[in-house]
Length: 274
Image (tube, rainbow, N blue to C red; front, side, top):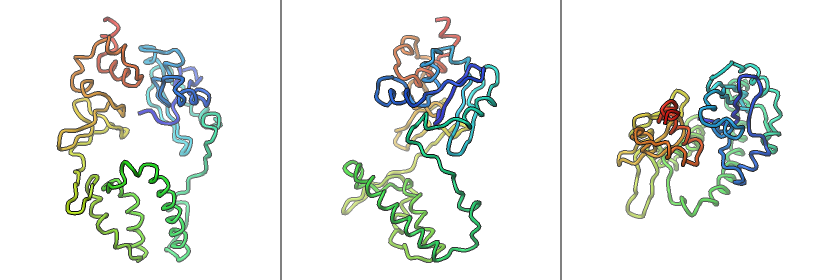
């Protein structure tokens, strides 16, 4: 799946990507493209349809400086593109972006035991965390305020579990939420509680993206699911009935990522013939 920051090239070491000016037009709906979509980038620079298949596709994370080759379809210019990414001023891509070094809490700090100062700093951070969470919660309170998020609460519940299990601070009031974290979302009422199961099936590709060529990539026991092709969410029929895809349906699809998947499922050679 395409992630920030995505690039394509013709194998000549000259990257094509969306800079801040283009991104602003996309966000303002002036251009009908998706940010950091290889297909969208290729389309914008004139490499449409089968021409896209002749481009190299890369991804770069400016925070971790991780460079990845997504596809090599022509001359390998990954070294030149990687060098370009490492030297690029990302304020030209996202003007407000501020990149700071990532500190690994176990490798970058030589701590042998938890001190009172550490606990104080954690409490201070928790206070700021609660304040930010409250302000964000206000913006979506009307739609989800009564839900308990189950497994999706596991991250912050683990934070307080650390205080109880390691620091000896009583957080037992969260015991109920810790138990519910093994399930899906919950909707409590006065005398009953609706609890959803976690997914019955979860399929991903080698990069961790939702993907299943034969059915739902994410499926619940009641039959509801999400159909996805290498991280691109698509209508069910594209996955379950690829034989019913037509060239007219491909041409009518306005979403560049879904259109690319339709072409893959339909077959590029078959589309060229038809």
